[in-house]
Image (cartoon, rainbow, N blue to C red; front, side, top):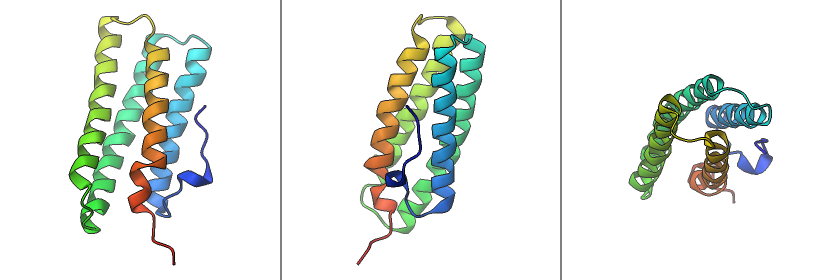
Length: 129
């Protein structure tokens, strides 16, 4: 479900590396849900996703600003929504509010990552003549 593809490449190795890490952690969550891992394991994976995502957001926003892209503010807002959603899932786990947390989280990650990797980061790709 969470496999790296060439179409996701931005041409900026540091960003592509973080994208791969985020996909790898999402893949661990998928594998964990398949094996019915406990909420502690899912919580640890969310922690890693938060770490990579916050690091990644800051780096990509810096590039957006350097390129003076008009969509910088919108992009930052979307990324913040993603991070806040991950934090919300952590709260749900801590309070055991959602029996289907791993499935809900997987669907959320899948939809967000596909949009992020195929649409939102297009502005980062170098222009080709």
